[in-house]
Length: 181
Ligand SMILES: [Fe+2]
Image 1 (cartoon, helix red, strand yellow):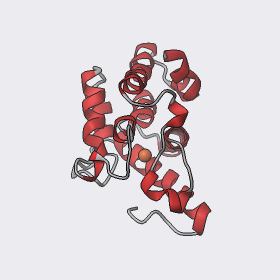
Image 2: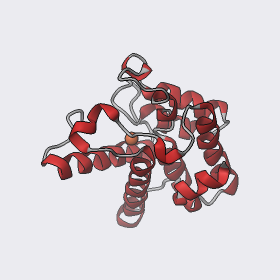
Image 3: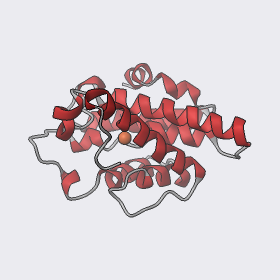
């Protein structure tokens, strides 16, 4: 299972701390195991917006966000000398939407996410897996669907990376921006 996660997310290799990378991969592996999905590439990103953006997979969105986040982090460091923890950015981006494994398991048009915003289940998953608080904070604050505002540069970068990745999908499909962004 872990090999499948490593294959799906080559960006795990961008995490310098090998133990952190292993823990992040394990959250995905355990989440997949607990879901109705057999493979990661079966998991949709956002069935609700399929009519607008097409059949985007969660793995592709997660990789988009992670690569945006790394680009933003690297720019923050090189342009302005911002002090940040790059491993936290990469791991947080890779895990920000991991709860969608659960949310879309057995999806029939309604999800718990309509009533309990997805970052809450995501922060539960990363907390019980023992990921550090700064990564839990990224997961719970990345979306405007919770009232938790990003309070670290790492969380702010992932919030922006997620918005940019989603705006890109909407713009490509109809020259309009993500309605909630
Ligand atoms: Fe996302």
